[in-house]
View 1 (cartoon, rainbow, N blue to C red):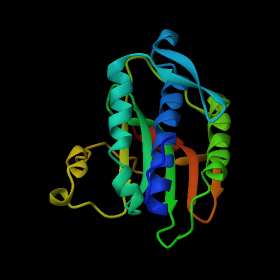
View 2 (cartoon, rainbow, N blue to C red):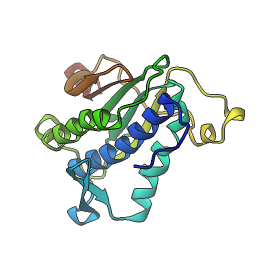
View 3 (cartoon, rainbow, N blue to C red):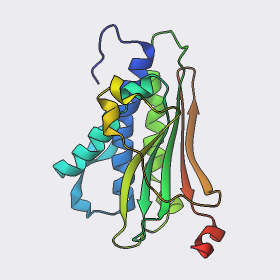
Amino acid sequence: MERKDNQSPQGEIARILVEFLEVAITSVVSLKGIYPPGAFERRKYMNVVVQRARHPQLREYIHSAVSGLVPFVQKGLVERVAVIFYNTDDIPIERFIFKLTVNQSFGSNVEESDLEFSLRSFLIKLSVSQTLTTVLPRDCRWEITAYFRKLPEVSASKDAEMWIPTDTKQWQQPPLITPIKSMNSEPLGLQLYLEHPSPSELLSG
């Protein structure tokens, strides 16, 4: 990880967090088995064996999506980042949610090693969470969606132009939530959990 001189604590947190999200989202996609095993290769990140996408387009999609969030994470505008899996009717059937809070008043130096130690535990937990997830149907699709606390000004940032409003069909009933991992430190709060449609949602669908 490269550290930039004179970077604010929030900028440093955003840089570390977004790099982590790129690895974690790749792990989610690999875990779900949408692509053949050969689409990924094993790499080490934060001293944990993780999956890296071998296909340039897949790798670039994940990288460009999350790296475009850096300025908004830094300002505390991003509430959640989700990896959403859809059935052939374009209805969400499973969502991996990363809910984040960056302390905007934190003014001390960021202890990168402490932050990495906490984030590493998410990658370990994620790698053994397959039993908590839903078996996906054939021909399903997936996407990365960011939920903003407040919409960024498009005119103020080119990064904002990358994010467009989603027309994703929403569940009418509150989802079933399965916690996977959470942390709450002074500079950063992070929760990872699964969302599935409620049984009544499936019956009404």
